[in-house]
Length: 174
Image (cartoon, rainbow, N blue to C red):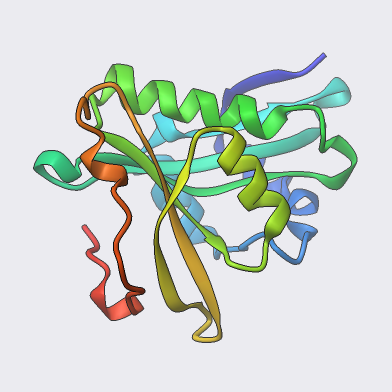
């Protein structure tokens, strides 16, 4: 049986095996701690039998006005637990929190342009490519900014794609 619960400090010492995938961004410990302290509602872990960490999602809420949104910083599932809809469950949880607690207009995420399986999954979950960010990953690989409008964005303005790619310098950070 799988349990999805809030991420806690002890999990930082137990989740490294989930991050071994070459497409998973790995951050330094202080980065994870900042998210855990500032956005605990957006940091969850999927735990299996024997308390084994199967995957996690880490995100935040940011922006102003109609740009107020939930952001998926990382979602990953260990290879042996993929194709069980864990990522979908984690994404749905973050979307629900963004919608029902923080009243966000949309949820966004960045994904490597070469990560076809992830892009396909996000597409199935209702995300659309909002814009391409040139050389987003380590100054080498393009990223796709994908978005999903939430009920508060009645006119779906947040997901109208930009007509041209942008550079990382053009992104707004809060």
